[in-house]
Length: 212
Image (cartoon, rainbow, N blue to C red; front, side, top):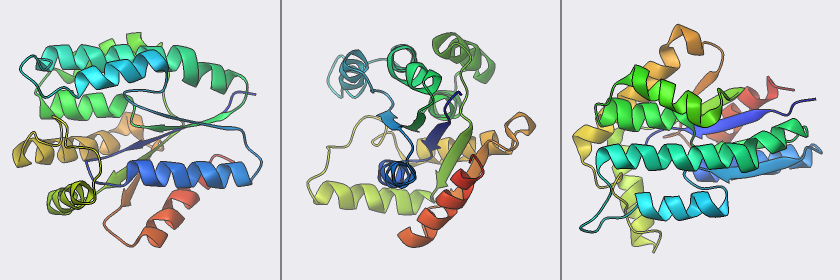
């Protein structure tokens, strides 16, 4: 039996990594084999591509190069990690996937959405999540969480986090537009992640329970 594929999406500071790990642990407690992965990343090659796309220096990737690096990393992650796990019946929990390309490079950078979708389909072989948890958070909350994380000694801000308020508003609106599209009906669960963590966890668990 094919496994289940759950992705976490949303603006910066929404808590994707935290809640993806919590859900993965919950699924394991139910006896599931769970593979956790992230984008860009998830395999040794894709992690090296992640380092490239985060570059802030003088030869940082152009918007077009950035898009292609993300897609290359996704193609590798799907081929080497995601699809093999699903084929053996495992559950895959992924921190970001195709919707991030449409939101960031499409709505944020202004690239053609339809063209990006075709490129993404080539990279993924048409693989789509069974469930996408969209952790929605207002821009001001997002900015405050990023600042707090950095003040605690977290990862330095990357180019996406430094892209500016207008960019991040466009990205957030893009995610919400994607969730509202008829073709995505039933796949998205939009969760307000500005609420207390326990409430967010409960709503995510209820959404995942639909896949059992």
